[in-house]
Image (cartoon, rainbow, N blue to C red; front, top):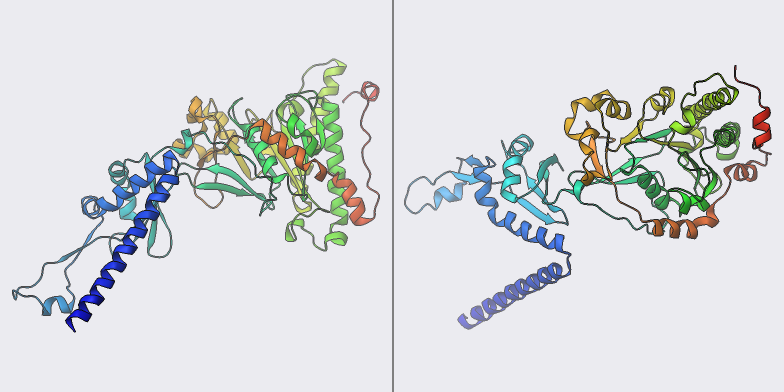
Length: 470
């Protein structure tokens, strides 16, 4: 009998040792396969686990339980009442490239408020740049500690070339805690992007095009006010994926905007017969009825007021005024038929983006700004109440590629590190997806069986013969 018990014990000990050895081997393989940043986070996670029972009471994250379980009282050997127990929240620690994610189980009087109050102490003890505490599941919290500041860590993004799972979900980057940030473009009429030159506006838009271009349910038109011809500037590599492209010529831009307004009108007239709904987003974009994205970069080129009494200046003023009116039509009336206007400029004042356009675009981002007034016109008056997220604090070269935005579903403003997409990757995506480029008006003709009117592009002689603006 004794020998049988000893044999069973030996088997159990062997099993425990085997499990321990297996776990140690798995941990070692995981550590060796990780990159340098993740290895540092793994070591940090070990320190967090080992030091938690000592750190928690010092940070005020424990509670005293004076009521003892009945079995403890019954089996007390000295006949004295046992001491009160110190209860500490149970945690689970997971490392990643930037730091650790700690999930904690709440206790009475040790919950969200107590953890948030202790966040600075946890940051110091865990050697983190910052720590955030947010509710997770009922009775549980998620504590995010970042060892390396994600905002000053440049990131690159190599587009996969695969069709996105959600076409209308724009993945922008990561926030202060390396948490992915995305924004829904469904039922959104317009997006504004502001910021100083060279801080990431065009790179952000390039990334959006590269991620969505593999889908045949999206088409692009580009108006780039920085260049004269399509082979110039930041969108040269992506031009073949756009069904229309214009440079800084106001008359050519005017023709493009008219063309899209006509498309908006024809889609409005056809949507019920073709899709069976009044709002395209009820069924989503498709190859025959794609989401049409108009990108207007350096918007002040097309909208700013021209002052002067000579004929040329008057003609430019008339074109700029009509351009603003046409884009206003697209923003205010194009949402339900699947038109989205993405407007970028350096300073989103009323002369660059007319207020009747800017103020109806629900999504706004701003990279670095020089003045508080520029931050307010880009993000709204409420940005004054969030100094940590104000884009005036992003002028350091380390923050190139970092934008501030009002995050959907969160209070206040969020800073986002947007990734850089290399020109070679943009060219690769454009070349691989060029065959998907279609004129949405032609697609509408095929779907509805109706002939779609198209504005005839103005020639130089036509522009010279145009009547003067009143």
